[in-house]
Every structure is written in C-alpha cells, then in structure tokens.
Image (cartoon, rainbow, N blue to C red; front, top):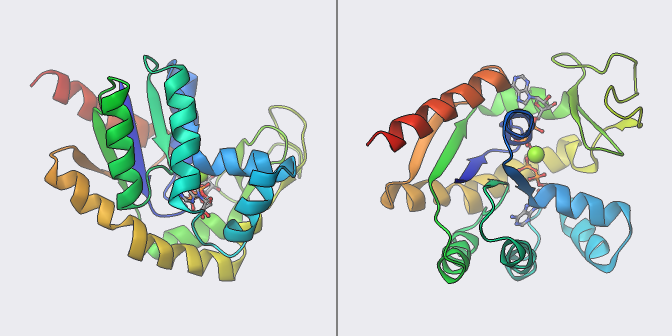
Length: 217
Ligand code: AP5
Ligand code: MG
C-alpha cells in the first residue's frame, strides 16, 4: 500500500505517521525529516535546505524529487507513507512518473483538514526530540520530564521553522503551492478528506476505515 498524507503545516501528518509506524510495517517517508537530518549533520544538502527552510520556503523541486527517487528505486516493493511529499504539482507529476517506472501504485491521498488557528496553536507549542524526532506539544502532549525525550532521553527543542514569521510564510506557501494538489488528486479520484481536529489515533482509524472501504469496492 502506498499512501500520501497532505495537509497544512501542523495538520498532524508526522503525528499520524507515528501511529502508522507503531501499528504496521509501513515506511514513513518524510522529506522534512530527511532535510532536518541533513541540516543536523551540516552536509551540503543540509546547508542548502537550511537556506530555504529557515525562511519557510520550499526546497527546489529538482532536489526533492531526486532524493525520493533514490529511496524508491532501492525498494520499490515497500509500502510507503509519504508525509510532506509531494507538495507541489510538479512533485506530484514527478512521483507519478517515478511510480510508473518502478511499477508502483498509489492507493490513496488523504487530506488532513485543520483550521489556521489550530495550526498556529499546534506549531507554536510543538517541541521535537533533537535525536530521534519524536513529536511533542507543550500542552497536548508534553514529555514526562521537561525538555527530555520519553523515548531516547534526547534533548527536546523547538524547530527553527516554528517561529511566528516562518509559520506565517509556511501557511502562505501551503496556500499557493501545495493546496493545488487537492484538486490535482481529486481529478484522479484518489483524494479523501479526513478531519485533522481529533486525536492522532482517531485520524489513523479514519484513514484505515477509508482504506478498508476502498478495498471492498
Ligand atoms: P515538514 O517537516 O514536512 O513540515 P510541514 O509540512 O510544515 O509540516 P509539519 O511537520 O510542520 O506539521 P505536521 O503536519 O507533520 O504536524 P505534526 O504531526 O508535527 O517540512 C518542513 C520544511 O521542509 C518545509 O517548510 C520545506 O521548507 C521543506 N520541505 C519538506 N518537504 C518538502 C518538499 N516535498 N518540497 C520542498 N520542500 C520541502 O504536529 C504539529 C503539532 O501538533 C505537534 O506539536 C503535535 O504534537 C500536535 N498535534 C498533531 N496532531 C495532533 C492531534 N491530532 N491532536 C492534538 N495535537 C496534535
Ligand atoms: Mg511533520
């Protein structure tokens, strides 16, 4: 099964991916996580990514498409959960070509719907583990010990792009460059909407129900 989760910054894509990983063998493919790892290691790609991500802008399509292709071609028979990719129509078209070439099939695109004020509440309160990436929230889901990851004891920090100015820029980028994907996938009959304003577990259960219904068709 190959599944894309689209949604505004803070819609809960990463959080629902954590539930999927807990409950299945699906491979979580988050371009945001890939870029953050490269930035942490100060690689050339990391330095390039930082120059865009810090301002809330997208990394160029050619760079991102290349990364995805290299991953998929190594294991085209895996089940993937795409989180944060594709996020432009160009990336969606490229993914389609890659999948065709690798004989892969896209099963479903889930649009996690949330309002802007919830996005701002979630992102301004989000904290992440610097070492393992586990996602927290200062009110909804704080770590048991302040500033320390429950999973690996790593340092829990605020993401560089979760500052107010970058959040606003990311919401604009979503509106102008990512939202057109909704119509793109609707036209292909692959898009289903899911209410993102519920627990990550309930979001997961809604997606599983949609997948079950699709299988039964
Ligand atoms: P990326 O890391 O993909 O960021 P994003 O799309 O802005 O999404 P977020 O990770 O901020 O939000 P999320 O939906 O995963 O929410 P989360 O689960 O963490 O990309 C970062 C940057 O990298 C981009 O801006 C761009 O520059 C670059 N980039 C990445 N991919 C790219 C691409 N394909 N092309 C070009 N550039 C690319 O949740 C947020 C908070 O809410 C957390 O605190 C969480 O605890 C809380 N929360 C989540 N769900 C719930 C829930 N159901 N109930 C209560 N609280 C919840
Ligand atoms: Mg995320």
